[in-house]
Image 1: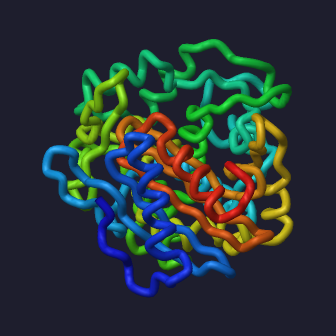
Image 2: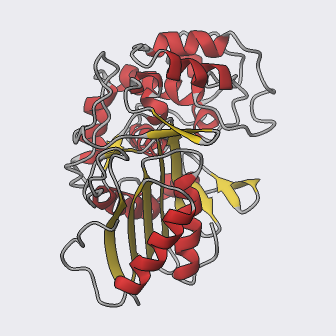
Length: 345
């Protein structure tokens, strides 16, 4: 059921729009979703739809913190690029110049950011299945890389593209080495605080991390016809590749700043958004994606899925957070785009 509207919602993106989105949410069998949409012509709306817990039936509040998965990569990428602007990191330097990593020559910082490193990814289907069986396990970055380095190099660096979480674990360690502080504190200092993101955090790998800031929100993994509660999985396994928590309100501010390059020098932002096609309608740059004209990222962990993007041409912002995975936020975001009369994601 729809939750209460956040104040300042305009009458244009009002009840009829919300009802159509909620009907699509129900059709997609999404327990709960938070949707933020804003355009210069239509105004803005932020709404919680459905429930935070399928057992209690409590409505999902529009300001609920949610796990945002790989949207984290844009934040880690922003920190790396700020370090580039400060002269502490070189984009085309070999990662081995900064870290003792058993990787082949040619794995540069740039290739880690744009996923052309060819490194083996640690998040195999077996790895994710093990997370559900042992949700309490705390992973260190070193353990994650040990899994990654146990696999074969996928291709020669720079010759192809493949989505890779392992590269962002290396980038997290690079940030700590170059900045001399924890990734969590550097992200707060370089990204969250400058943009006023008070409800966004990147927790350090630790035990007991499963509870969200609002622990009543549950996350569900779709296993065939069943919904399995995945809230208790310790997110240390995702860390710099997908461990952040945020709200729709914070992400709306963040994704516009991301697309506009607010925190970066102009030349650095230009390099960041020099994107190459990687899939139908999708291009990828330095820790940023373009979905048929909208710039941002999506993300998924067991129990949660997210989509946040900004169209620099139409100044349209769209954020969708769901408490179920399996591409739920992507599907709902594509529907919302049709309602906003923008090209489908």
